[in-house]
Amino acid sequence: MRTYTPKGREAEALEQGNQWYVVDAEGKVLGRLATRVARVLIGKDKPQFTPHLDCGDHVVVINAAKVRLTGNKVESKLYRRHSGYPGGLKEVPIKSLLPKRADWVVREAILGMLPKNKLRARRARKLRVYLDAAGLERHVAQKPQSLAV
Image (cartoon, rainbow, N blue to C red; front, top):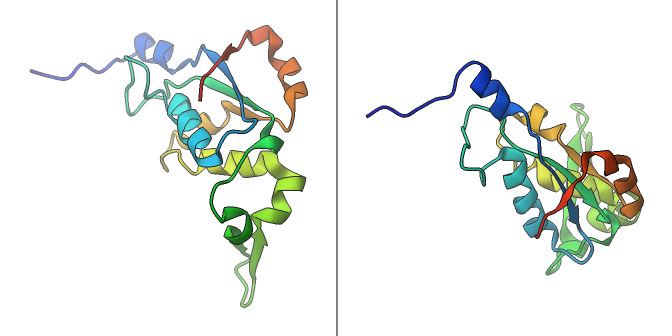
């Protein structure tokens, strides 16, 4: 028996992420929040999930500044980047990033859990992260539903 694969217009209809969800990150653990949001962006929870199609939904994360880290991560977690030149390694502790760029920290955690393939950039465009609840005002027209994390 063959596995059914949607083609043509049916595949296009699956790729249109028509649902919008809002996630309140206040008091939530960063890693657990990121895994739940990544599953929604990929579309794994949908019955019509197809691995080679982008059938995920849009997600708006609010209150990213109030996200929580467990254990000793606040003291020990580092973000590293390299310029490509000798001695060009830069290390920034999460302790200094959270007050300034908490939205970037949450976004990087979520995008790090997406599969590294050709659909990644398209899925990443369906994610919006805001420091506070005021960012939700931009998406009132999409009528986002609350997503339990």
